[in-house]
Image (cartoon, rainbow, N blue to C red; front, side, top):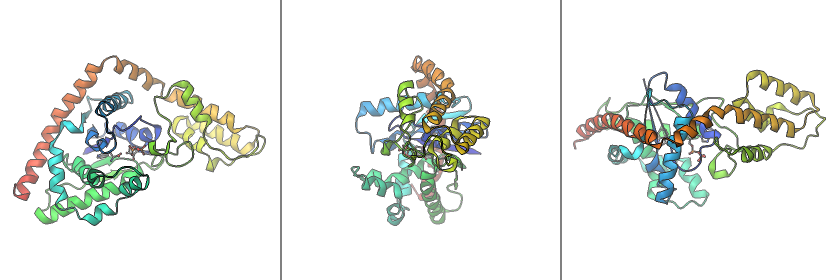
Length: 320
Ligand code: ADP
Ligand code: TRP
């Protein structure tokens, strides 16, 4: 079973990214042949400084390794070290109906937010399809917001197979975790760097505390019972605290007498502790950038062999 996922180096890693994409990917590296990459071709659509793109790429590599990606189990690489993917993108574009891309939310959302649009931003799902199909991927762990792109990927693969023969491309399946499909941000909306409501995993202690204290709550007074089903605090606490501590917080919500400020302090404590081993590992990796670079170079060599073989198969099928 081949598992594949990618993440864009377009800002600091937040806990939505971690629980939605990174943690499931790290779990899955024990269950099959895993390929994970840093999607830097994709980030060219939004990161327009070369220095920023390079530093985000390096930081994300360190983050992923610090969070538990094991290069002995998973092949880890930069997207741009496998340029074959851009050739496959072109071939896939020729079977992709305009309407399929016009229906994609991500382009419409970005346009609505006033982000400068480009052909690349519009065509981005085709590059994503190539990312997935070039590795003959079976399973793609992502957050819920990527579901539509997986459907587009399957549609494109079917179009290729219909036109050029069954089995040219393999159809992948998304893997979307129920509990972590959409981690809420400080305001209760989906946590996202575009909404300025994120908590970074590698936040400074003081900033983390400040952010947790900013989480939106209703105005129920301290002494009154609170609804545990509609609380961002509890939703986040469930991700980082033990089941016993979560049960205790639910009891304390229901019984009244504890204010939101106290619950937030508990959440901060659990969050700080949950990521402590990652922080330690991150500091070690930052002191050994040569190691990080070697991992990515070795990963790219391995990924490229697989990509080359798929691309050759597709080139032959289409008549190139
Ligand atoms: P952002 O929304 O902050 O721009 P990205 O679109 O770069 O995040 O997402 C990177 C990965 O993290 C994707 O797999 C996405 O599904 C996942 N992800 C992002 N935000 C969340 C969230 N709030 N909950 C769960 N998964 C998320
Ligand atoms: N589009 C994804 C995101 O913005 C990143 C990505 C690019 C990806 N190519 C991929 C994810 C292939 C999974 C598989 O988060």
